[in-house]
Length: 240
Image 1 (cartoon, rainbow, N blue to C red):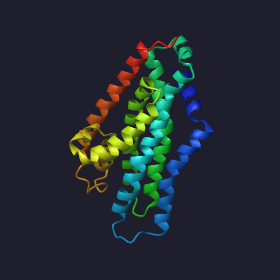
Image 2 (image 1 turned 135 degrees about the horizontal axis):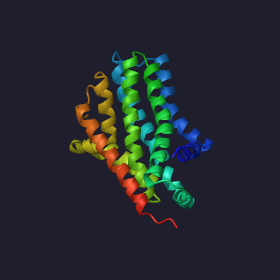
Image 3 (image 1 turned 180 degrees about the horizontal axis):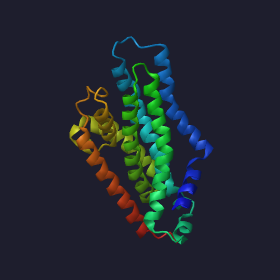
Image 4 (image 1 turned 90 degrees about the vertical axis):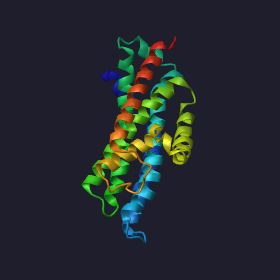
């Protein structure tokens, strides 16, 4: 398992792809620097940070894009490159292949995404340790949930990246905002609820956000379900 984890990290740290993802993650950080130097014409800098930098950029864009790109490739590229058979030849169970892949994705995506969110909150005026810690916790949950779903998607279809982007920008960004009753099926809402649960100043005006006690069990079910589905799918695959 450790060998697969190390190999997966090496695959994900390809310079070209990593630079693109880092550029995406650096965008809200750069804007937070601009905000710190030239504060907006509003007394409520917290709302500005949440409504402009954290919600639309870090949570709605950086988090899903970085995680979906890495997660769909973790097992999907093994199939495309026809190297999955070599993993099957190792004396490792199917879950012993899936878990290192998922952990490698969480490691890389977690550092990039959490780094982007924490730096954004630290640089913007009125950021605090509690704010940064809550952002890190919420983004970490989001990374794990997205990773579990889209690692499975990478096994199910060759168009997993397109499927992931449709989920993020059609389902979460559009449909869930109009049909609030389905926010239980939105990783975006799990993330916001976790951040708000640890720091109730953030996203305080968003009545559509779930409570922490609702978001954590819902996210846990999603993570367990899709990790299980991924292992089941890999067990039944014929890669010969």
